[in-house]
Image (cartoon, rainbow, N blue to C red; front, side):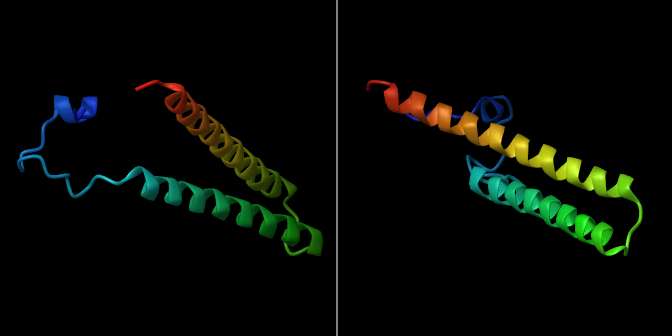
Length: 95
């Protein structure tokens, strides 16, 4: 028995069931998100380095970069926790 997502049921594709070209898989969206979090982390590291070496004297920009990286990382961890919880719940289901 195959179940379609609710969005697919509400908006059926016009091409006879083929995936739309603009849709992404969960894995590709996850990779993009992790790459973005990594970019925030690298930007924060660079901002701290620039502040420590005196290339940048604006502590506010450094703190904003650190806060962005922290928030992105925390959100990624929450998504990971929800995915793990969902996986564990599925594994507990009896068939």
